[in-house]
Image (cartoon, rainbow, N blue to C red):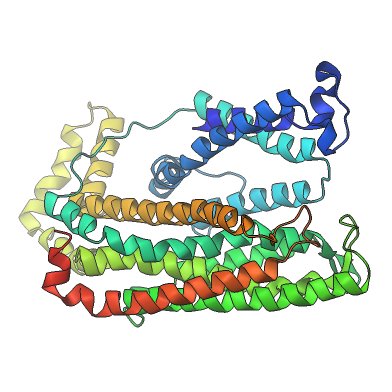
Length: 452
């Protein structure tokens, strides 16, 4: 997957006009007439390769847990560049990952040539692929038959519900497309400081992370059905807010005569877009959490993993009581080291370590299997969001066929406010149809028998 991602970005970099304009006999400017057949072939070849590489990101989380997090927690590897013993090792690793990604995104945000914007990801993915191929990978035992037949049937019975969940992904895709394009053409000054678009993207990511790890859903204060409905309501509110802000932005564009000046900065601060960025982060995080809980708790009726941890913690003192020995046995053990002086001391250390792991570090295989199954449910939720992204492309194509079209060559000449109002109406209709299905029809045996 990493090779496809690297090759895709490399071809995307080569498709920019300044790279191959001498070999193809075209001009090197970023204009429509400077893009020849070779550039188009490279561009359309790069897109499916990048999509194929991006599909492998679902395995990154499991790979990171298996190869990096577990060795750190077991003490087999140590991160020497962190000396804070108060901070857990897992938090330190994730903090380092967020720091590096923020620096890279902050650097590429200020690069204007598209050849450099595509070139930097190509270089970093190449380095990551080489590092992966040359590193030592811990052996992993593949688990077969994680899901039972009854669990698979239960998931397939609920497949029609996915039709109501795809519009959430359609709205979530706005954060990486039209919202970012609008922000790039607006005033980036916050007081006397000029900031990048990351000033809006980072809060959105934090809100999404907070909602996805919220304890209100895990403790069933907000049930999965109510949580999914709330995420749809937030999506409607996000589209309405985006439409109102875009209507205001277009008014500023017309007053200052910027319709035919796409490179000019709109005299309107990009902080107007902050509410819709925060709302779309809440939509993504809340839907991601509640859809996963809907399948694990409502459809499959899986128990919580945290219960196993509590029971293990309660059983620890009992295990210590069992190890209490009589004075005669303790006296006999004092004589054993003198008899084993000729043996290898490293072997004795390994035996003590193995007993400690058996006593305290034992991992329940059923609990590990349950955790793996929950990760597959999370991958399934990510796939639903990906289907929403594909649905947004189809919806833009269908809306673009309406004459006069709302989508023009530039954002200033387009009417994205009409598109946002359309999304709000479609999401509202989806919520109206979703509520009776999720709250009433699913409890009917006749309805569930239709999909058995």
